[in-house]
Length: 169
Length: 424
Image 1 (cartoon, helix red, strand yellow):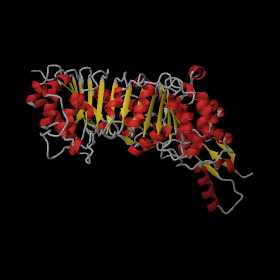
Image 2: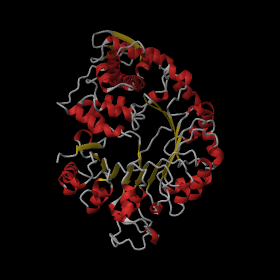
Image 3: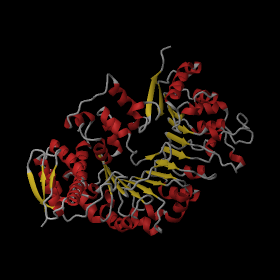
């Protein structure tokens, strides 16, 4: 079985099958580039991911492992309507996978899935964040996502005032 | 969250229903900028009569937000339902929710057609509000419609949408009969955006004339509307879009408990000499319809339909009401909505002076065409207009709704400008 060594930003190495790695658009490109530039067809590719730390990379690979038999979706599929396969439902495994993660980890996972071009993981993590927005007030959203209002002066109140008619009967 | 790239934020926001985008835009400038530049979410905008395409064929909304679902099969639906909070799942998974059956813009009609009967069979009695997009490519029959309504014993409102007049008219004639609604015990609201025939309305009145409290019509042909509406004895809200009928002057609705009249985009049937509508004529028609119990009037008409040759001549135009009667009947109106473009015309002030007890005036930028400065100028013009001070002491608020008024929301949201009555 052909393998590839994927190295995280903090130096941790993960040895995974190339078949599995190629489910990531980014890793697939890297492997193919390596093949073209290498004289030795048996050589084992080594890919450094300088933006993803080990803990997050492990989670991505774990998700890929679980979904290795899923059809690979093009990165731009369903982007027109903004809904990807996350809309089509998550598996129980996905829900269990995401359940223990705090929001910080989820954010890192989103960035990793985006960087590695793993659309399925990107969709379910984005959907998870969406679910943490839905049903909350503006202040609750700011608290949950550690965001500060950067509206100046009474701009925020003005904003509310200007949109009040939207909810008027 | 701030560190997420724009495309990721867009992806997250794309899952959000419009209601929560409205909230998210207030969170911070960065979010507002991202949302402003996103394509507008699917929605029906009744003010402008535009139907934005929707891919979601079945849509469920709950009180805490919306879940947009694509129904490929009933198993998928059940799977979705299993994700609802247990409290909602065990008792009523569709509590206070809206089921949208979009037969027009969905991509996979066969999938919907396949899932619908079994879905309605299982969950129909949970559905309170039904939105039905009419222009479906599936050869429909009355039996099909009965399938849709089957088990919907708790249905409270039905909205039939179509952008084409003939769609609704033909469809209603062919596919709706009394038996289609026979299971609805709490049916109160009915909307047809697209048009219905007189005969259909009469049939509906015979079955549900005592029940329906809110009725909205799309383009309506001349003749018979008064008679048909008279049979809705509990009608409290009446709205008409693209109205082609001027029968309202007769005052025959006075026995109806109508509280809210909304006339949107009155326009004439040019080929009917009896319905030669002009600008003032439209005002007369509508204001005379404001019977004493009506408290809100929404009037969105287009100036371009003004008849050039009879701006002040009503000969041949059937208005039995006198001026005094007109003024008297308008006295109960508390709120008026009219196009922003009317500001600056003499007729605008003439209209306002008819409403002695007007409390709120809403000016709507119907065509979404005004620039920021123009809207500003209109606001100033109102405040500086001497006739403003001649209005009744009751007028407290002017609300201008235009997308062009505020930079932060100019792309996504109409905005409101509220100015209080100036100190005299």
